Image (cartoon, rainbow, N blue to C red; front, side, top):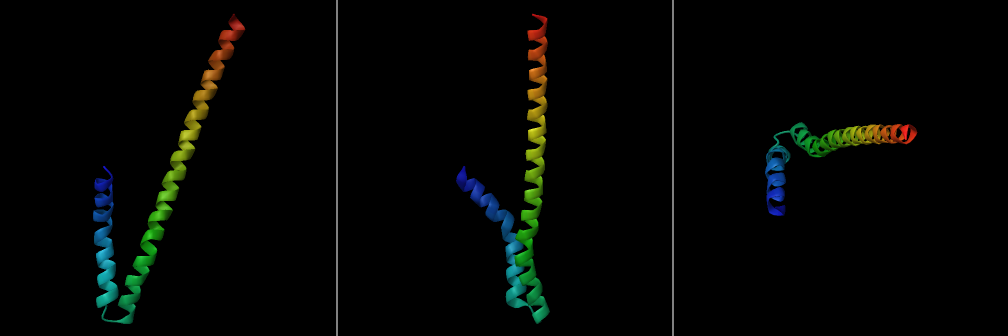
Length: 84
């Protein structure tokens, strides 16, 4: 299982890494090389920003769902206790 996960991550990142490497090593001008360096620095930053946003959103939604379930459960408990 872990081997497949590592291979999937490697296969996903490989095209972006190769394009960046080619831009840095074979760039005809200094600007072309700088574009490759910017891609190498900016790509992971952009992915991390998206990942943090998605993770935070999912955690907030999970918390809201758990809180609603807890309130619904405590409301049923009170109704049973008061009617007894």
